Amino acid sequence: QVQLVESGGGLVQAGGSLRLSCAASGRSFSFYAMGWFRQAPGKEREFVAAVSRSGGNTYYVEAVKGRFTISRDNAKNTVYLQMNSLKPEDTAVYYCAADSDPIHTASRVPDEYDYWGQGTQVTVSS
Image (cartoon, rainbow, N blue to C red; front, side, top):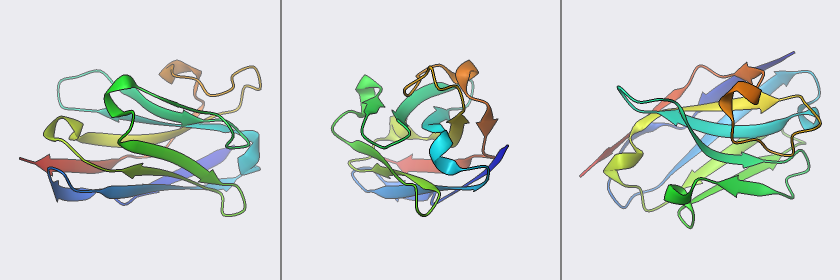
């Protein structure tokens, strides 16, 4: 089992940047593929980015490509989401998640993740 704690959210103006962190404790961090998801009020939770166990493969939703970067540091048991050129439509609660199934390189499907953090609010003002 793994526990996940996100941090780094906040209020930022459009065009600004934030770096989210997700610290993991418990079972070996490198055992898990990691993902970031977000949920805006009244909307479904959506995939943002995912990274494979080694960090060698990354995937993004089209809306954030070129602006967001997911990375991980297995020595520090942490996954990051660097968010640049933020837009008001990026406003949401951001969640990190861990996937233990070795079949999945880095899934885009929320139901394939076993563990979730509590979320961190990101608000982008126009």
